[in-house]
Length: 220
Image (cartoon, rainbow, N blue to C red; front, side, top):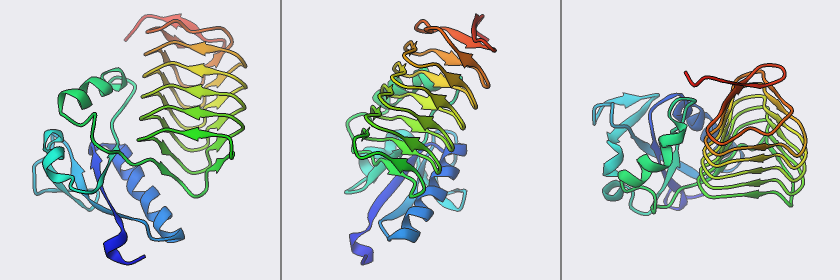
């Protein structure tokens, strides 16, 4: 693809997810050149500095002036901050700007699966029949989402999460590495599931659960 036809990307956030996204973009471009990363935005990093080999263009609030015809990539979100991600994008004026969705070429995505705007799908993820990802959903490496799973907007699945059929993950929920969720379970909005947990009953909105089987715990 001629360089003028490449889609410019600006990464939102300079944490570890942005390093992963740069690797995902490299792998996509090896298959067929599509994207060009202009830099990243982070309120905690100095404008003009470098992070993971790309320039820091400014803070999050600079996005409307810097983006041009490009697309943002949502690299925000952690177990402690994920419930605030949507409000932060709103406050900084990014919520209505265009975001790219990135799907690693080694992900397996069924033809009936749906991936919303601003999603990131890591390598070796499996999205089976009629899976639906909302907007700003991040699915890390080696996750398996079985038939009919729904992950609502701003959900994050850390590496190695296994969701059985028809599991519903609520808005801004965070599922830690290696957790397993039984079929037909509902995980509530802004819930946090600890790493390695086995979820065999519904999780209330805002709850923190962990263990085998997962039980509700006090918020840290």
